[in-house]
Image (cartoon, rainbow, N blue to C red; front, side, top):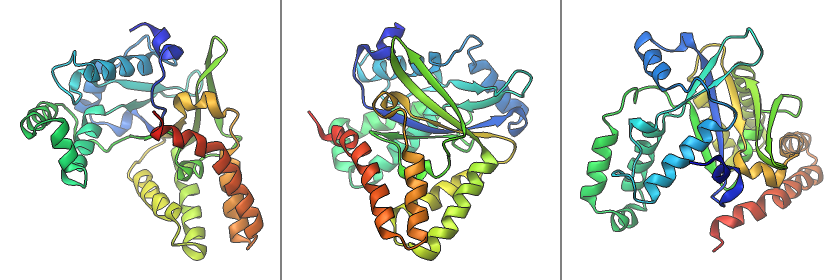
Length: 280
């Protein structure tokens, strides 16, 4: 696929990603051998994104025999913070994530709609083809969100964390913010304790519990990366991390006016983007 498609030739749903990069030591020899085979030694800041988008369009466009991805779509991103630093790895695990999503769809409230889109036999055949992929038992290192970044993700980052802005032809293609895994986990834990005492009924508390549990499942000197995706063009430079932290701090101090003001800023920034999900 021509990179121009990724660089703004078509409008696609905004997709943001939270991923964990892990060192070589986090994988067994057989696991890493599989990942190494899926590595593109020439990958750059957007090449894996372009390849994943092309794979998705082939499935949606009907040129693929399977609606769900197969092992052919497995790709691995790498991150090296500085020359001489160890290389960290983040497999996209698209097959495993798709299986989990399909299982949720077929057993939840959308089951009837799912079987209207595709007959049960087709779902079964696609799931069977997908489950033949390797490394499905690995913990998922990637989470995604459509039409906006969840506010709980901003708790993991601060304005002075390492930031990479990817631009082309005057457009911001994405913004990626990276923070050490241990630091992100500590930030989530501290905020959980704060919310447990002052606002345990908030949806944010439940989201952060899930996020903290996910991060706790990884060992080693990894990195957490918030990848805005193409929504970055709409919001960069983004003050959302500061607004989330400010709002929660105001709430902890009993400053409801300050907390409301921070939420208003977040709503003005993100509500128009989330409303696009229902636009025609």
